[in-house]
Length: 161
Image (tube, rainbow, N blue to C red):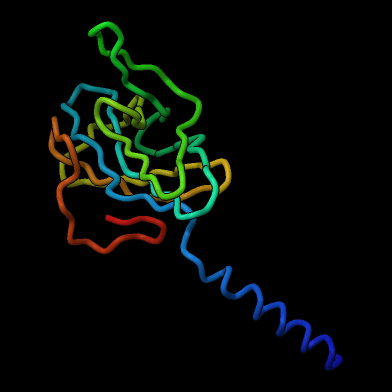
């Protein structure tokens, strides 16, 4: 290989290495779901999305092997009546955590293949418009939980617990 090519390759690696070493533009914190009673075939998953980048992104899809279908949903109040509806996307703004929680935005798990049991966990794939896909582990909390229990387990890449 000519000397010029080696120098050029070293310069390219030197310029791109800091970019490759950056953290993921979006991290997922405290992904959790509620345990479901035996015959219930729907559930919800919740988490906090944090955009560490400089431009907004959008969560555009979600998938998990524990359900026949997973959808993005939102709960809202209309004249004192709570309503739930699917949404195509959930906006994620830089520096402003997007919280998916009971009574607000969440992931609806439809046609659960088996009940979600407290203490178990399951994989979920989140798809973002710009950041691509992020794999997370969702921890199952007790029925009726309103948030995740503190965890001492190590976080997976791209997520914080």
